[in-house]
Length: 399
Image (cartoon, rainbow, N blue to C red; front, side):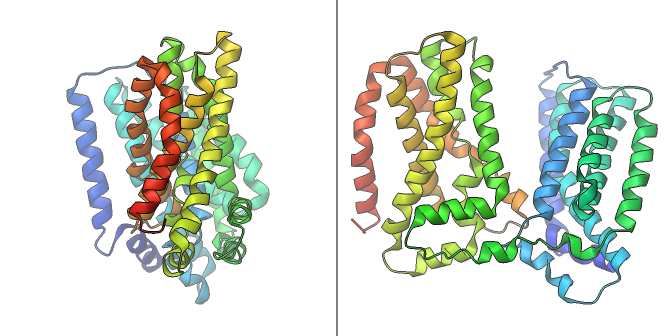
C-alpha cells in the first residue's frame, strides 16, 4: 500500500513533492499576510465546517470522476494486477491528500486568518473536511451509499461547535473506512471516458459538439446551472450599491463561468485537432465565442429578472449592457484559451480552480465602472463589438 500511495502522490504532487511544497508555502504566506492585516470578521463555526466540507467534497468528487489530460496517468495502474484493498486505500488517500492540501487548506487559511477561533473550533474545522473526504471517497466507490453518505456528512458539518460533533466524526469515519474496505478498486475508474472520447473533435456542427460535450460532462452543465442560481441571488447582495453601478458589476461577476472558458485546456484531443487542421482558427473560435456569449447572456438574463423583481425597475440601456458584457467576456475568454491555454494540470479540479479564471472578471470591472458612470455609452460600446471581432480575425491572419 505504501508503494502505491507514493506512486499516486508523486503523480499528483511531483516526483519530489515540489508542487505540494509550493502550495503549502503560498498558503502559509497568505495566512501570515491576512493575519498581519488585523482584519477580524465574525465567522460561525458551522460556516467554517460546512464551507470547508462542501469544497472538499466537490473537489474530490470532481477529481475522482475526471478523465482526459493528466488524469489518464492516474488510471494506468488499472491495467495492472493489484491487491484490491491496498489499491483502494492508497488511491483514496492520495486523492484526498491532494484535495485537502491544495484546495481545502487554502480556504481554511483564509477563514483562520480573519477569525478568532478556540482550539476546539480549529480541530472541528480540520476534522470535518477530512471526515467528508472519507465519505466522498466511500460514496463514490459504493454508489448505493451516495445519498446516505451526503446526508450523514451534512449533518455532522451542520453541528459544528456542538459537544457531540467529535464522536459523530469518529463514528462516521469508522463507517466510511468500513465501506472503503469493502469497495472494488475498479469503481474508481471513470466510466465516462470512452463516451467523452467518442465525441468527434472535427464535427461539422460545432454547436452540436458543444451540446454533446456538455451531455458527456454533466458537471459542466451543473456548474452553469449553479451560476444561474448565483445570478438570481446576486441582486440581494448588491442591494447597497446604486442600481446603475450594481447591474454592470453583476455582469462582470457573472463572467466567472470556469468550465465553459477552459474547453480547449481541458480537452487535449480537441485542442490538437483545432490547431493542426487548416482553417480552424476562424472556424472554431467564432462559434466558441458565440457559445460562451450565449451562456453568459443566459446568466445575465436571470440576473436582470431577479433585479427587476426585487427593485421594480431597471436602469436605462440594461439589455444592451447585458449583451455587451456577455460578448466582451466571451471574446476575452476565447483569446486566453487560444493564446495561453492551461498546461501542467494534474486533475480536473486543478484546471477549474486555476487563478486565471479571475482574469476575465477583473478585465470586465473597469468596463463596469465606465458603463455605470456613463450608461449612455453602452450603445456605442455595443456597436464596436462587430468591429472588434473583425480586427481580431485580421490579427490572426484568417479574415
